[in-house]
Length: 481
Image 1 (cartoon, rainbow, N blue to C red):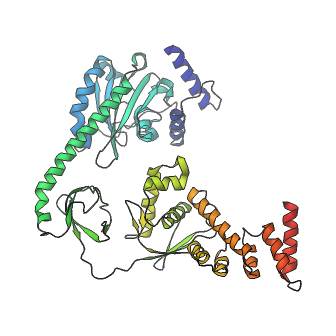
Image 2: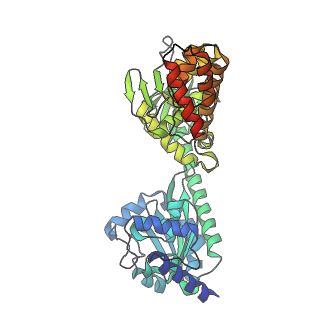
Image 3: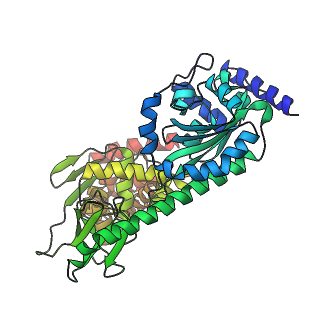
C-alpha cells in the first residue's frame, strides 16, 4: 500500500511539473507550496539547499537565538526517539536556517548528501517544498512525504515540522522538525512534533516570566518615584508588568507609538529604561487639537488630506478608513477582516494593512485595541448622509457626484454604497424638486434610471431644453432594458 502511494505521488509530481493533469491531485498545501517554490525559481531537477552559516559563525547564531533555552527540552523529548527510529531532530530559526541537527550518525551522513545540515537554509524560496520551509510558510504543522517535495533529490525523504511561536509576541521564532529516509516513516511522528513544539513554547513562556520578574524587581523604584502619580512598567515588547492604579492600562501597549491613549482619554508617554519602559501620564495643558482628516471617496479615485497634507491611499486603505469612519467606537482586527473580506477574512492581513496605513497617517491618528480614528473626520459621503438626515435634499444630491468607492468589493463598502444610493434616490423621487432630480440623473447611478428619467420628463416644462435630452435618454434606457 505504501509503495502504491509513493508511486502515485511521483506520477502526480511528474504530471503537474510537465503541465499535465495528474490522476491523483496533490494536497492543496502541497500544490500551493509548489507554486510558491516555482515562483521563487527553485529548480526541481538541479537544486540543493544553500549553506549560509559556516561552522565558526554558527556558534554565535545559536547562542543568541531564543530557542537556545528550549533546546534541552527538545533533546529530552525527541533525540533518543529520533535515534532509535533512524530519524533526525532539526531545529531552525524563523528563516529556515538549520541551527541544530541531531540523531543517528548514519542518517546524518545521508542528510549531509542533500545539505540537510547545520548552517543550511531550508525555507521554501531556498529549497522548495519541504517540511521545514512549508510549515514556516503556512504557520502550522506540515508533513511532506516523498514526491511531495518539489526537488526530486529529496523524494527519498519524509519530514514533519511545526512552527514554534514566542508566547509573548506571537511571532514565529523557528521550527522543530523530524526527518528521515522514506522507508522508515512512522505515523506517530506528527503528534510527537506538535508536542515538542508546545513544550518549547512552554519553556519560552517560563523564560519570559523570569525576565518579567527581574525587570519588575530592578525597575520598581522608577514606578515608586512617581509618588502616587499614575504610571506603569512596560516590557520591551509592550506588556504591562505593573501599573498604578491597577487597571490603568490594558495588558499590552504599542511601544512604537508616541503617545499611549488610556481608557479615560488621557495620554501617556513611554520613557526608555535600561530594560523596558516607564509610562507616565501626561498632565493636561488644555484641550489638545485633534487632527483633521478630509476624505473624498465618492468616485473612482479616493483621496485623503490630513491637516492640509495629501495622504497617498490605496483602495484597501480607503476601505479600512471607510470601516473605521462608520464605526467610530472602534473595531478589532477580526471585525475589520469580516467587514473587508467577509468570511474568508484574515486578521493577520488586516493588521499588516493597518500598520502600513498608520505609517502613512503618522502618529496620533489611528489607535489600536480597538482600531479607531482619533481625528476630526470630514468626508463627502458623510456630508451626504448628514444632509439626508436633516432633510436637505438639495445638498445631498449636489454632494452625491458618484458612488462610494465604486471599485471596491469589500462588504462594508458595498453595504454603505447601496444604502447611500437608495437613500439619495428615494429622496429625489419623493421630493418635488426638478433640479434635484436633474442633478441625480447626471450621476452614473441615475444616468439610466428609468423611473428617474420618466419623472423628469413629466416635471420638466416643454420649453426647457433639457427635456429633449432626458426624453432621448429615456428612450435608450427603455430599449436597453
